Length: 233
Image (tube, rainbow, N blue to C red; front, side, top):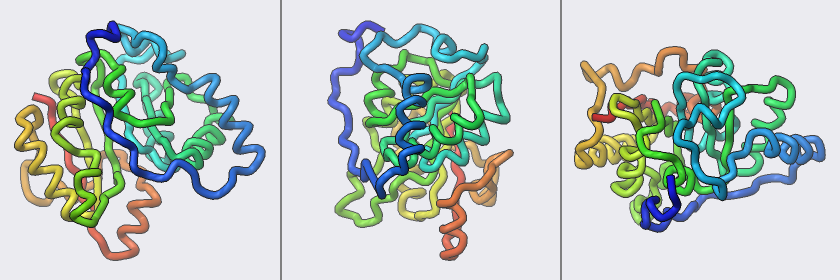
């Protein structure tokens, strides 16, 4: 996509932490070498076909926004070598953990980005993704902070632009207000159809779901996760 044709709206600010505890030397080294191989360069023109981003021959491309420690992303990328996965994580310690993992077991179907996901979404070409996962995002539980939630009209516009027709947006959270927020915003948007045949569906984990540390914490604290799937119409 030519830069002049990209959305003119400013990106949304990233409100989370960028850094945690100091990295060990081997983590810092893995991060530096891993970025050379896996990090996307958004100063370059985005490819017309996202499969060109990967060493592997991939037939579809999925995006995971905020992969945390990478448990889910690593599982999906390992079990599905014919699918390309792009993972976004601005928190440097989470990214370092991911780069340590792929140092031990390289993945030809993986690329990563370590900054604001909205910049990546605006860089991607239209109708280029087969799926977007937003799993246990920061819930910003205080009402005065709800405007910081990643699910918003402007970001749903971004999702709708880059998702192919029939592509899936998957959202998981253990915070009831954020689940309801997402259902209401997707319904109001009009470009996404909630895929639930019955009420119990949204409490069933996705097929092949490996679990995450955030989910385990929620269950320990007796919060019930919800798993929503929306089809791009």
